[in-house]
Amino acid sequence: MALWLLRLLSQVPCDVVLLDMNLPDNAAGCLLCKLTQDQAPLRVLMTGLGNSEKTILHCLEDGAAGYVLEEEPWQEFVNKICAVACDEFIISPTISTALIARIVELKQWAMQLNGFKLTTSVIQQH
Image (tube, rainbow, N blue to C red):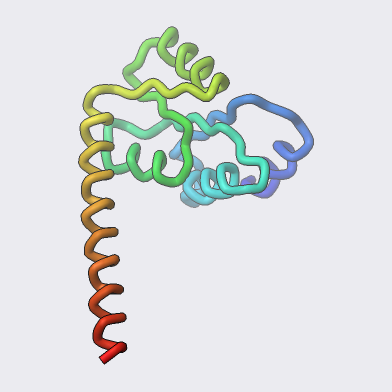
């Protein structure tokens, strides 16, 4: 199914791809990466995420341009499709808080990694 979809998307122009996390064989994660990391990345709006902050953040980190929660009304669904098509992003306050916390976590991790490299290079010089 994933290969069929990739072939189809290479032949049919589209503004936004709706991708459901509940695809068989956990194909959604692989498809998301493939669709957003190609030379001509597509805008992907994720559905079927439940309310898991962890899953939503993972999808955003993998390149999703947005997400739709199941309890959101149809008008919000349409608004998010339009926003993603215009390179805009609509995010809930809960997810924005989680996203900021994740950015801080990644920054701290990068600083630790940079410190490790500095320590290693200083040791190698002596």
